Length: 130
Image (cartoon, rainbow, N blue to C red; front, side):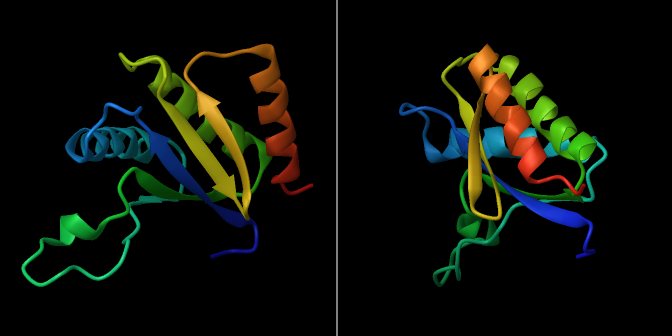
């Protein structure tokens, strides 16, 4: 990865009532949406080795995506905005996506608030190249 690039790990929280199949479907939908943005990559990480007889899809880290993008404020803000837009279109308002860069995390919800915007701005500033 280039020095001016970063990886952002996304963890989807679909709520307590969501089963593995629903989480997998939601993760796939979010991945398809993010691929259409100006990011370098959107991958579903592997959670470990598949047990004998299991399909490869059985070992992906459920609800997790890893996004590669340029390490600048515009790209990170664009990713956060895309996630917020996607969450805002979901029928379950309690869904959130935790975003992590270098161990620093922020939880993004579908509904915007002044406090969340302040936290997002600080997160972007911490992870952008000067």
